[in-house]
Length: 308
Ligand SMILES: Nc1nc2c(ncn2[C@@H]2O[C@H](COP(=O)(O)OP(=O)(O)OP(=O)(O)O)[C@@H](O)[C@H]2O)c(=O)[nH]1
Image (tube, rainbow, N blue to C red):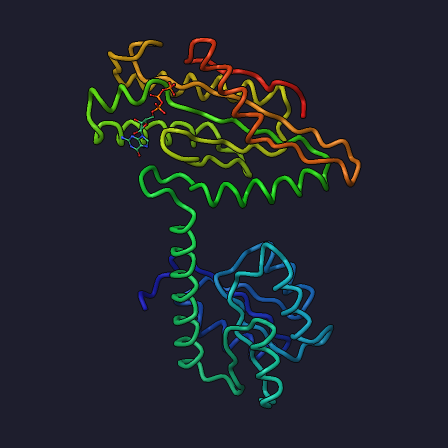
């Protein structure tokens, strides 16, 4: 262990002050330590601090540690945080219950500091490897932005969220213009480089929390914009178009400009509030708008054809 926290933190949910002190003293040279003396405070601090790991005492004054564990596992913000359970009365039943509710491990009291430290280190390492793997499965390897699979999932999640909140959901489809000619004249490696630059420029424009920029396939990208109105999406699309043209990647064989440009189509869904109202095919609508932008001469945006 390096002796530095590296931004990693541990939340200790334990009612016994002397145990809290021993654990905190053991951990503080290596981790930032946050403490809570009961289950309710523990859940609140877990949501607020999003610690790297939680040490959870099973016997708490206000509620059982099992209930805290259930709450943590149900909540989107805390469910992926590894939880290590602690208890004095180690019975097989308790141990089995903790693990089946989603705890990663179980430590019996009295606390043996070196064992606690070693187990924490193992579980933090596993969690960090899992995070890296998860990121890899969501990323397009060429450009580093989200991949199609990640986009499909986000579209599904955001559609459900928009239905619940009645907030608008917008989508932009982006297609690089005359890209076949770019590859044919400058080569595939230069083509790949151009796609990377375009992706980075688009990701910068879609940087609000919840926005998602993804490579939809080939030289086509998509931007998902929750809580974005039909007017706002056009503004963002125009910024994206401008950001790509401003890269000034020479494209002497384009019929639209002297540099790499893109055409963009927008679509917006404003949920009506009726629970069974049909969900529009946002990708299809944005694709139609994109086609219209291409037809009109490329290097331009085409607004949503109609409010879906
Ligand atoms: N370098 C590179 N090229 C790609 C990649 N994926 C797709 N392409 C190329 O993108 C080009 C897309 O060509 P088309 O679909 O004909 O479209 P276009 O030439 O851009 O024409 P318009 O879209 O009508 O403006 C093809 O030549 C593909 O080979 C990639 O990962 N790297």
